[in-house]
Length: 269
Picture 1 (cartoon, rainbow, N blue to C red):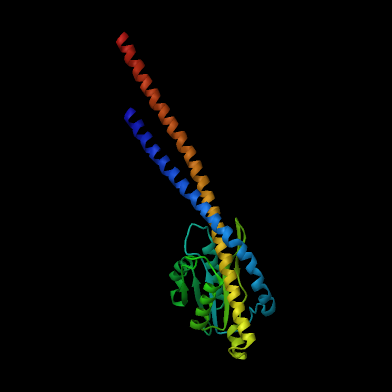
Picture 2 (picture 1 turned 30 degrees about the vertical axis):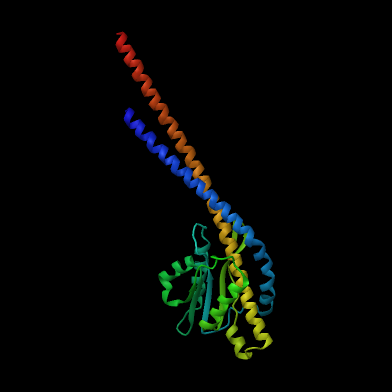
């Protein structure tokens, strides 16, 4: 009996140590995510003024009949950030289904490792281009502009739509499909190098820059929320383990006292 109680104490003590270590990691990850969020949030909010006039001018044309559609799905490279990647992929699949058919072609351009990992399972043949490690270095406009140029040069399309998570608060983000941009049709009517053509291409880069920043904010906010929940769950588990450990220790002490009293009584008898 005594031996089994000591073994149980040892197991519970080791489990408590593991949970404390996990709690330290989750708290540290929450602080890192908060620091990254503060660095990106202001830039994301300021960049919203870049794409809103563009959308107001060109608008969305959902009923247009084009043969080649491209969906730019923006996701994260790392996990532990809730369901932001799953929601983006779900919306992208829905748009892909609506724009696919016998005489239509719909392709994916994926930014981020997590979105690629999900879409490659059932849509590998439809992935035209994928790019990862966007946030390995601090995000800047030049980096995103290069990505946009790669899409414009390497992917054939008539209409393009960007799917990302729009940041609202640390605990709230909205999966957002950006309006269709009929850049192929515009370029057929405009000569390369014309100011209007250059302006349209520049605005596409600005829209993509905002989308990448918004998604990065949503990722860090979701990671903060997830790590906060994990830290609180670890604390609750630690409380239960501490209670179990104290009960086991008390039972062990009680057993020892009974043995001492029984031995003393036997000697007196």
